[in-house]
Image (cartoon, rainbow, N blue to C red; front, side, top):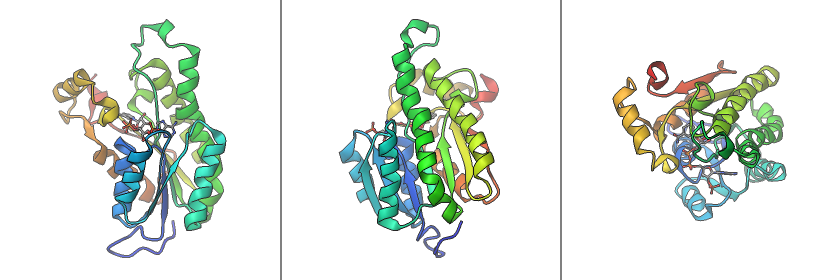
Length: 251
Ligand SMILES: NC(=O)c1ccc[n+]([C@@H]2O[C@H](COP(=O)([O-])OP(=O)(O)OC[C@H]3O[C@@H](n4cnc5c(N)ncnc54)[C@H](OP(=O)(O)O)[C@@H]3O)[C@@H](O)[C@H]2O)c1
């Protein structure tokens, strides 16, 4: 990956597009790259004020409202980054969705739920990958997909959600095969992370505190640190990196 960069701001001159960055993990990722001097495209589909606030808190950022379930809006996100900065170095496919549905309640997981979840968690990742690939190839950049432990182990907030994350893990490996050596493609598969999405999941936090070898859930900053590592590591591609404090080892 090429970029101007300096010792104080090693990511200066490089551009990072983070979907779903008005909140939680995406906001932490935007702030982490921004703190290193990167220019950031901040995005969300509904929470415009929160997205603008994240962008305003960064040295060089642009907020764009777009729904990643819409193919044209995915292209528009990439076009906005290129129009503003003329390059793209990292795409972080972080936007994700999915209701909580106990897995045994099969009939609650209607086809409409499956379609909604896949539209964002799978098709959105695909549409952004296709739209961003040429620009990323020019900078020898990379893609980081935020998937889930639920896509690796048999658990998670719902069956459609877990299946969507498994699909995106597999997509990560397949796309890494065809985009190398110009673009590296990796995924981070977090276990429980303390974000607005999980604010009411007290039981899950208790379980992590008791059972996980690290005795706590991850913070959004824990995840951002590993996203940065995946984006920086020059030889790493096609990897699904589980970040769960060891929870998956013992449950
Ligand atoms: N928290 C966890 O325990 C955990 C664990 C494993 C994986 N993950 C994954 O991590 C990612 C971030 O989750 P989080 O916990 O940080 O959730 P969060 O705090 O609810 O943030 C989700 C972000 O995605 C945006 N978003 C949702 N749908 C979107 C769409 N269609 N288009 C564009 N942006 C959209 C949201 O903004 P709007 O609603 O305004 O669009 C928000 O900015 C997700 O992919 C999630 O599946 C989370």
